[in-house]
Each structure stands twice: as C-alpha cells, then as structure tokens.
Length: 117
Image 1 (cartoon, one colour):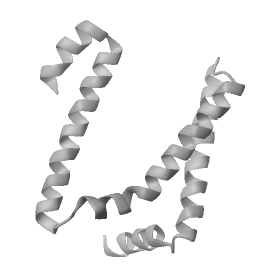
Image 2: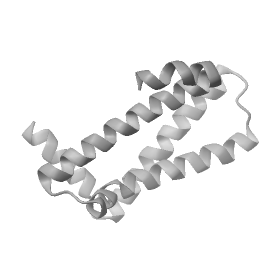
Image 3: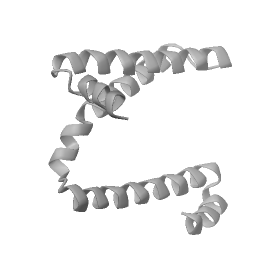
C-alpha cells in the first residue's frame, strides 16, 4: 500500500489516497480469505452465503440514501448527521428483519459469541 500512496496522491490527490488505502485493504482481505480457506476448508460459496445478509442490507441502505439525497441535499452538518443516523437505522432494521425471516442465524451466532468469549 505504501508504494502506491505517493504516486496516486501526486496524480489524483485525495481520491488517489482513497484508492491506495482501498487497494491495501483489499490485499489484506484476500490474504485473510486465503488463510481462512486453507485453515478451515472454507470455500467461496460458503463465504458468499455468510455475507449475503450484510451485503443486501448495505446495498439497501446505499440505495435509500442515494434516493433521499435527490430529495434533500446535504448542505450543512445537521443534514449530514441526519443522513448518518438514517443510514444506520435502515441497516439495523433491515438486518433485524432479514435475520428474523432467515431463521435467526446471525442472532444465534451473536449469542454464542457472547457466551463463549
């Protein structure tokens, strides 16, 4: 990541710094996934099943924020804070509803983690 920071910031400024940070995060996640796959015989299909609910909630939150942004522009800090609270509420409520529909797998995992850690 460090090798990418300087050239990307020179050429693209703040966006270049974000791209450099994102590339470092993606590389670290790829290494973590390969380690997990080797250690626990963990495949891509199983991984996609696990992240399906959070990914759907994130996409739903993004869509609603973009739709709301077309109606109410972010022109001060209070509107921005309202957007953050709105996004968090949409994500939490959609995750809660989908978890209940899907059989409470995420809730049961959270209870197991609390009891065993």
